[in-house]
Image (tube, rainbow over all chains, first blue to last red; front, top):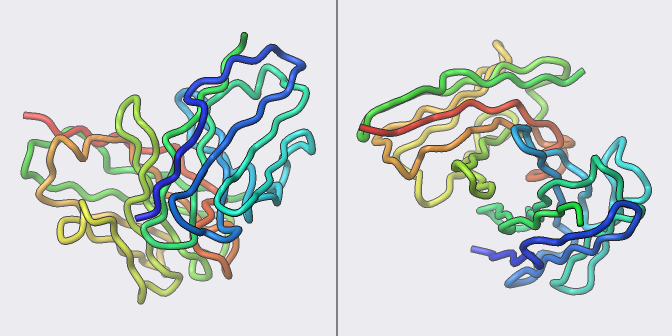
Length: 107
Length: 121
């Protein structure tokens, strides 16, 4: 099973600033990595697939990148609606797995 | 507009059974792979099961294999998860999710609101 390790567990950032979230895979997943946002009491929402492709309706200030088994989600100009939990997920190999999540909180 | 609506959750005793359903609309159900993903209270997400567009392919995580059965009825636009031999570790919100596109498995482009399953004596 591929393990995804997200860091940090919690990230405190002020509105208007940028946030960088990391996800490291225990083995190669190619570009088969997605990012989801989840707010309390809600279902997850797909943000990024194929490591760097924004899902429909996702603003351009949210972006993803990859370098080998290291993946990054960057959110620029943080707005109030961005404070949530973010999960990375690999779909290269079954079982599909999620990272443990990064909580992005208001500083 | 894509909609996925789960039902069937509830409280069940350890060792019991429960069947979840997910009614879908707004897309051609028979073209898409579908998934069940769960989230234990206060915990992260866990992919539980997958079923291919025509039901011929199914995958399960190890902890539910032999106890859970994913199925679909393309004539009724319904996804199901039959769960048996339930344990407290199966307590979670269960989400159904749809592949984002027909040609790539494993990217959950749309999600239901979830249904809570509580296994307790």
